Image 1 (cartoon, rainbow, N blue to C red):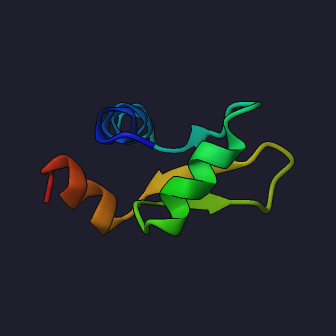
Image 2: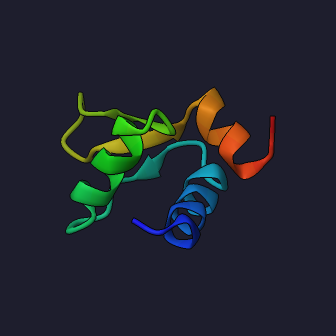
Image 3: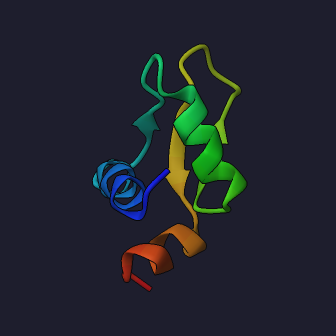
Length: 62
């Protein structure tokens, strides 16, 4: 994923308390999670994601 795409996705996630993982986007969200930028909650039927401190730092919101 390119930096601009990462920032775009992180900004969407950051604007929401709990951002739903959109259908067809699981792979991109999992990539962000593998980078330590978000945490995916897989406990519910609809997965959701939340920013990590590393994700906030990546956006410059530390």
